[in-house]
Image (cartoon, rainbow, N blue to C red; front, side, top):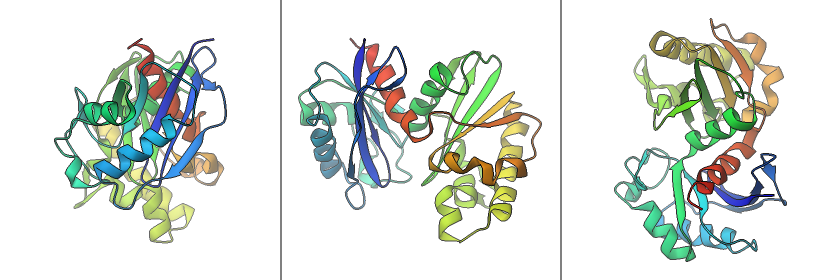
Length: 246
């Protein structure tokens, strides 16, 4: 069994677990610690180190980050402290943990897991994975190959970003009913369809476990399915990426 540690930095929690990469599932139960208020670099790195030290693993570990990540450096900071912009996340986490940290955009990690083990497995053509949570993350695949850092949640729709209109946080903050929220999500999906003409949408994030509430309300040309790995996808995808560094 090949086991690699994956860490997922989220808006509300930083969580991790060793992942059995043969099965695409956690080898042991995950550990979750709340994300420090405002998610500044130093405190976040300290929490990541605590999660890493919770497991008896060694070698490189994978870590998601909610931003555009190029060569380990954060280029954006939409839902975390802006001090992250320009920060070498790889160097910071590697120094804090004493281990090689392989850093990837959070939605890209979730998408990689879904395409390898979940709802996108063995699917050709253009596949779009959307993570509906604090914001809207995206991962785009063409015949199984990732197009990194797409950030479709920041598409402008009638003067607001897609995630301001239809993230799960927006649904909660504005106390939207499922029908009203599904209308907004339909608008986001239609915009993406005009740009990319995907064959499949995979909807992940925390709201995916409640897909029975809204999936039937969506109207697209592409097939739409819930993510099968749900909130575990980021950790699994991070571990998958780190396995290439061993």
